[in-house]
Length: 155
Image 1: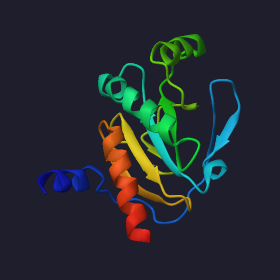
Image 2: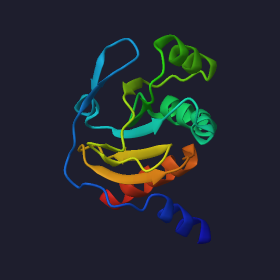
Image 3: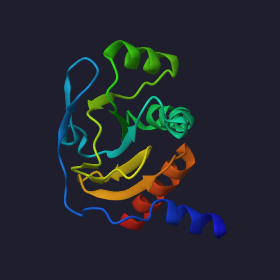
Image 4: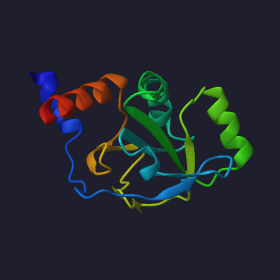
């Protein structure tokens, strides 16, 4: 029961209930819009290469993305720093990141809401509405459990 209480606190946040859409370029300049992924859960992870907690959660985000991308969920990593293309590409390769990495200038607030620290992760429901925010690292288990609980509640 205690673990459940901790988990609920991790994803407790006041987030918009209305669908949100915006677009950002990936590392090759291709635009990605949240609306492109409607019908799936979207894990939007704001991060930076210099951030140790961001680096720690990358393997879990890769694992989550790989196990869900063809069915019900995707991860979008949004890099919030002024870093060169070659440096970012080398970082992505060294961490074997398989989910799309989008580029953004450093921001304190985004169309999804505030970014009080890195990493910050928003969960977007299949209808496009933000349903949760976590400031700090997330794990694959937390993401799997949260989505499973939301899907059960919807039944």
